[in-house]
Image 1 (cartoon, rainbow, N blue to C red):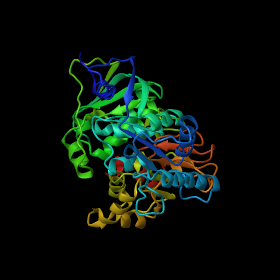
Image 2: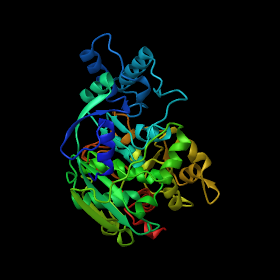
Image 3: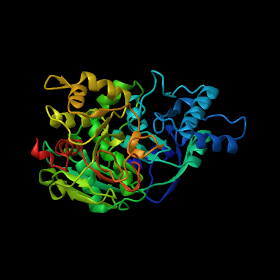
Length: 431
């Protein structure tokens, strides 16, 4: 039976030769990830349901990253981190990356890749909807609720329905001004925020495989914005090189069969595409940057698991070199590794950090920061009528702070160009 890459990985995890969409199966989980928002309730449910003498099914397969509400004075947020610390100490967790230590990594989805947990062919669950980011590495990854995570924590298993797959193929050579963010926003505009509900979104084509791993992660990261169960890109030599630099653990590579059946297929020619944005207040409210050029903004934001990778800051610096931003522009590295790279990576002989600071950007610590609004002292709540152009992944009312603010989603190129002009600007005006 011909199968898609998602079906093959799930079949392996279920110990079956084959599976088909709609089939319910028990999966053996390779990795469970949680963080400071969902970790404490997950651990509480696990303790309640499995008893005082409960044991974690496999400590090596549990990964915990405080990353959402960490650089804040909010006592409730601080308590969540304290609960993680207590649990990690009590159970001697080897993969707990505590804030305030050298082990702190930043945003969980980027850190999973950097720390070598994204192994092709495996099954990864996380208590965060953007866990689908890891699918860029040719593995099955999806978000689950706290109760499901607690069950995995105690048993290493989960009951899932095999999703149908949708295929998105991008042909051609990527133009200089086009990014993975433009590709995924194009898809969202075409299929809407529920167009892939409980389906696997498979990305293919020469344009996709020309992207760096960082850019591929942007594609799979936003599968959930279409309702997707997972986003996935088959592992190639670029993937394998990245993974082998991060871990010596073995892995298995799967690819879709030519005769595999899909719910639907979409094809694009990247040479005919142009920079796009998602206008307030939905990720599928797509328009071309040209059409909304000149629209007022009050802030720029480059960060998050979607837009806080080193590739995003390189894009921004191509535009910001020898320029000055006209609106407050926040730069939030997605991980501590990315923050360090800002000092060593250069553009035209100048460090990225220097370019960003000279342009007038505000550089903050690695975390999820304003992407999720966060506690009251997180960036994004200070002005009720902020209009932000951002590299983040969601622009629902209140997502980045005040419910009265407006958020445009865009690539790092578009955010940088817009920050320089003080209005939404097509990056082709600079590139």
